[in-house]
Length: 273
Length: 278
Image (cartoon, rainbow over all chains, first blue to last red; front, side, top):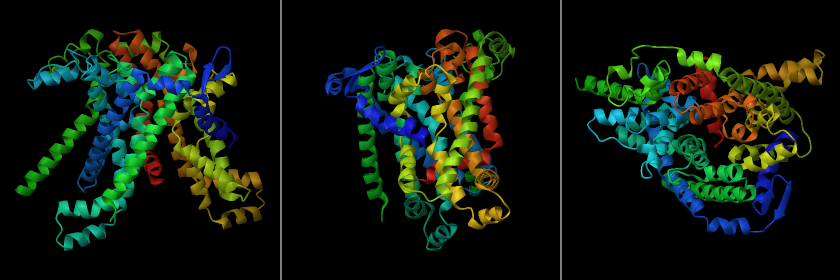
């Protein structure tokens, strides 16, 4: 308990406090500077860029992941020979570490002679620059993250699907509901708690993403892929500005809280009968 | 006929998705047994050569295992993850036992606080945690890598749920047989919640094995570098040794894939039980 308090609880409060200070690591001193960190934040173009990137990243990646995970979950939940094997295979990207995934994808994205360019070439499409281009880098990172995450959320949704009693599906079938109607009228409403959990948890994870940016792009080219969590890292551990980094971290928390509240509202209204 | 065609299309779709899921890893594995020059030779234009190495070699593995410090990095990760699991199981199960079995003042409040830490992602607390660990003088030590990861709200929560369900008779009977406080925990409670212990261990191990941000900032010396951080250093410092980078990536992935294969049931349970809280 003491450990949990020291290593988990205290830092939550301390993080907020830090953002009002100038932290001098070498001198081991904290100077209170009020809202100066936040004032600087507002005028920092990189932070604005990172905030916009982070929001865009989530607007794309989270819905795509949730929808694909739902599709996969419904697919692998069918009683079919060999389905258990397919389910395990789809889970493979979720098993490997994010660092390894980022490294392998970075190599696959290699401009000119990378594997994905080879595939484009084989399909008769022009080769792309992927991570080295300001216009494609973000989409490239997004694609990798989608690939990495879908299997994980699929497993949770499969567990949710198994909770739905077969009898309800049977009753709907007897009442003459087709597969699509059964999906929208039975599966979706009954899966809402699991979907809501997946959406919220996925949002939190995607907002806090750091590894892909660090490994694949270091935020570049020209800040086109920097995310807020990467700015927290960069300010704290590259520029050693802890107070400022804490302010960025607080900003990130506010954005996440806003997103989660919106989601809960939206999804509740959407599905509640 | 229509039925067979539809089934065929379904399987085709399933296979296509399976290929998309494993292909990057498959390619990494194949490339790891190639010479550096060959890795990109057959990717620009795809052919059967892309997937079949013409002269498979274990040179990359030999190089990183015998001549680089890869074994040290790998060992660091094993040590850190192993120590976290061992200490974590003990500390968290003891806390869980307390919460499940004893009535004490402010128990609800304390358990509530445990649950609060469950909702707070690690990334949020990393800066203040860094300063705490720095004040303790633990920066760049194994303690920095291990100790902060030991107390874990999810493990406490999971084990407590299992222990709370144990029938009171079980403990009463043991007490009649002369078991005292400590052995009630060690001999009765712990063995009865093995599934929860396995799931918690698996989660702690994987979290530590995959950890990146914290080891990156909390340690700086080469002797303490864990495997995930080492891989990214391979990438920046030995830019052209793609084969070694991929061989290292495959080796770093092996333990978790083995764990996944052996403990698949618990693995899925660990994923879904994190989901069931919601």
